[in-house]
Amino acid sequence: MDGKAVKRKDRLQTMKLQRLLSLTRQALDKYELIEEGDCIAVGLSGGKDSLTLLYALHHLRRFYPKTYTLSAITVDLGLGNMDLEPAKVICEEFGIPYAIIPTEIGKILFDIRKEGNPCSLCAKMRKGALNEKARELGCNKIAYAHHRDDVIETMMMSLFYEGRFHSFSPKTYLDRMDLTVIRPMMFVTEADVIGFKNKYKLPVCKNPCPMDGYTKRQYVKDLIRELQKDQPHLKDCLFRAVLDGNIKGWPQAVK
Image (cartoon, rainbow, N blue to C red; front, side, top):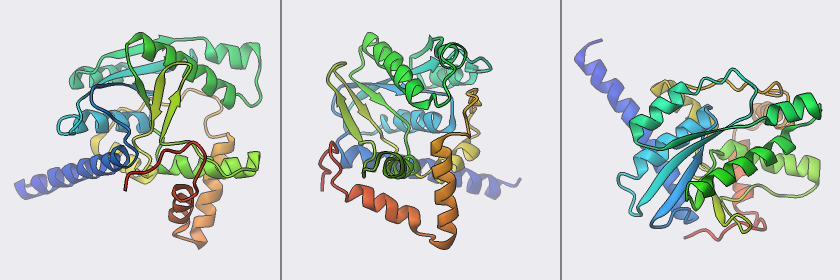
């Protein structure tokens, strides 16, 4: 590869990072997700989404007008086959404290309770463990890596399975824990995340959950993909519907 090609490749990578930072900052500013002095715990699953979020928040804090600190937390479900060593290396490189919480959530769900639809209970238990550790570390906010496609899919799942128009909020205060959940990547598409992962060769940890790929969310994701073949702008329309939908609990966007 000649010198010009190397420079061009580096420029493309830089632009990709700049795009990630621009979209992330758009959410931070629009919904005032970060305040001066925040201590933010990043929920780090080891997947492409949470690793991308870690990159975004780390690089943004170099020039974001409000100072904040980061910690990373992984809730280990006890399912085995999770190689978190690469995540540890990244956190060390970024100077971010990293905590791994060992649990038996997997054993409880699949061996003891033998849950046929474990996702909701699993999410509740994971969030509980994450919240407790975040408070222990002195954090006042938790950042989840939900992206734009997650927002759309959650809205569709709410329509199909709950009969209501709803999706998770960019910012949610948990009064019992005195914690605020933020979702800084809500304007980042899954395609952007995949592109970022490929360009920077993020060390993604394979999801060990036996339900991965067999959930209601996966069904809705596949359905949207099929519908979009006939309506290329479907996701844009669905996302706009969420943003303009006056959903209960959503913060007022800054103009």
